Image 1 (tube, rainbow, N blue to C red):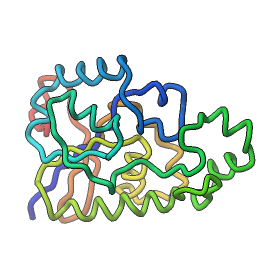
Image 2 (cartoon, helix red, strand yellow):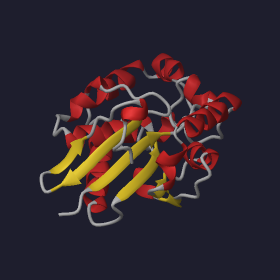
Image 3 (spheres, rainbow, N blue to C red):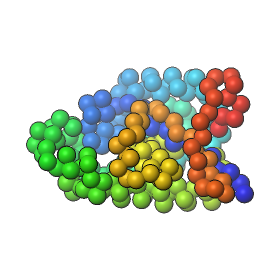
Length: 199
């Protein structure tokens, strides 16, 4: 069976993301985000060019790919979580105006006090997308969002939905996955010149 290699990349920082804004990837990269994306491309220029490339529809994801000279296909299935009425609001604003709703959302993956997407629905959406990737390209780069990468890890590790909140994903983090006859597995890579198996 052919092994599918997938690298999921969290888009570069935005000002909205720095302010801990729901839907912080639906805006342009700021200057710091552009510099960070370019720095990563300069460190590993060969990493990105060997794969099929897809991107979330969000501006930050598309611009992150552009900083690496890539023209990704837009993939709606790896869009950020739909935060409903909270989109564009900061965590502090929501905490001040809807503390009970925020607490419910942070503890119950089936809660959707914002009127948008439940975390369980996000996890299911990403699980279906992951399953579909085993029949496509052998090497895939997907530029997406921290929440999507968390959801992918919950799926691959077969963890309970509450594990979503135990996973921290920084901007420009890269999650490497491999799919074979035993399903998806997390693939940890060696750093630097020892990394002969890089995607």
